[in-house]
Image 1 (cartoon, rainbow, N blue to C red):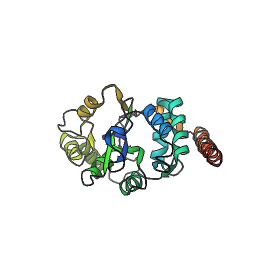
Image 2: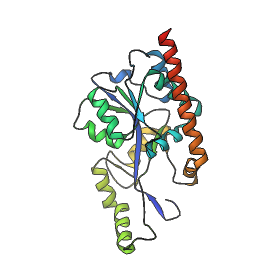
Image 3: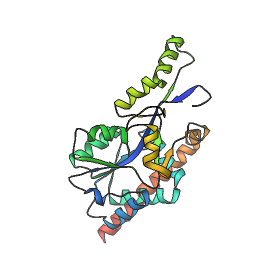
Length: 242
């Protein structure tokens, strides 16, 4: 919660998603560093078969990439360079990434929302997902009541219900990890913490989230992203022509 004004309503891990028909589970990278080594070792085999969020077009993608940068800046920029060198498709939504992966246009997706991936996996056997073992970012869907809400009491009643045991249980049933520890089931805060252990890395609802909202920091990150993308493509083009 943020000053009893904004409330996290879910815990949603961020994962690697892959096409089971094209990549066996035992070959899927299990950490961010493994992803770098995986791409370094197979630059041609997986040419143009990667997908992730476009930080220019997706606010969520921008958040996830900057959180990766905070978690491990050296590995993050190496990973970006290797993904681009191998061939990267940048998409504005998780749904579009999942469509590419399921169709075989992309083999592997980076920073995919697990809640969407798991729902799709339940009806599409072509998809699989992995939560990274070094750290897994965990997001919360944030709810708040606008100070200009025309019906603040009704909004408060809805918020209370959303955070109640029943409301959280219903969220759990549709595949969103509940934040309450008294909710039972597989998609819960308790089960997620147990499964991830030290890799559990929640994106805290605090002033740290304001860092990359700053316009100058946003411009700097996107400039660095563009430089990494363009330099990796130029290097790859030179190697290919040579």
